[in-house]
Image 1 (tube, rainbow, N blue to C red):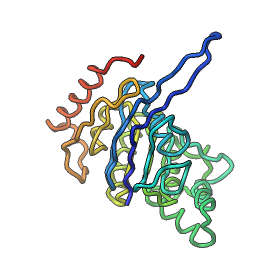
Image 2 (tube, helix red, strand yellow):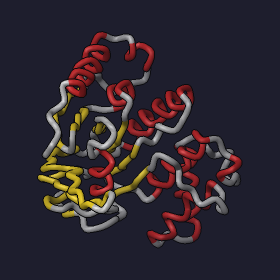
Image 3 (spheres, one colour):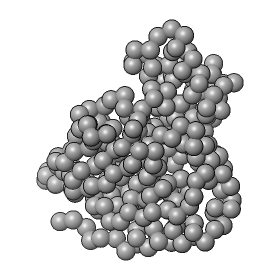
Image 4 (tube, rainbow, N blue to C red):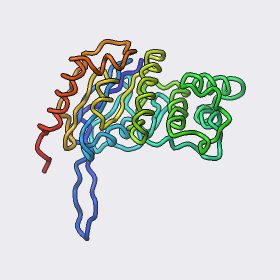
Amino acid sequence: MGEVSLNDVTKHFTLRVAGTVQLVRALERVSFTVRDGEVVALIGPSGCGKTTALRIAMGLETATSGAVTVDGVTVKGCGYDRGMVFQHAELLPWLTALQNVEFGLEMKGVRGAALHDAAMKYLTLVGLADSVRRRPYQLSGGMQQRVGIARALAIDPKVLLMDEPFGALDAQTREILQAELLDIHARTGKTILFVTHDLDEAVLLADRVVVMQHGRLQEIVTVPLPRPRDDLSTIRGSDAFAQTRYHIWRALHDGAPALH
């Protein structure tokens, strides 16, 4: 199982600016559930609370009120039931690709042949079986992100959390990794919650799209595209893709008023 739920999650914090204290309402009573095996995208303008919600789900930040649960168990800090892929790969530069993936497994207590075999399994899954001895500076940006995905998957989390994982990549590499993520999901069945600013990416990858504005959940849009999604060129040209993309675009541009 791998169901993750945000239940009335609120996040407030204060900032001191030019000698004054300002209250920032990053999230305001956000609730939604990502079902087991589902892919859900969080989309919205910068500053709407997408990444904050993801970081609270991972346990990297705490909510002011409300709770996140994974299979009914309340999140209280980081745990191996969740894996995180960041916008930048955040690899340890002195380790090889193989060692970077092994690192998380070692922290989980995996040792010996099982450590090597598990790391190789997931590096092979992301297409890097021939690059395991390279260090990060010897890898392209797309290859570094693949290592980051392999590292997150290797600990066998119930839920994969992804914070704009392809946002820093060129368009061609981004499209390649989008297709690879669809393939990984088809093979593993992992529950995935990912943040993106890209409307096309949200529709291509997700089963549902959570639209956020000003720290609030504005709308949840179901994507009527069947899986598997192998032929992305046909999907991009379909009426269902265009209509869903436009619906999300309208939701973003007809945003709720700012919180006061």
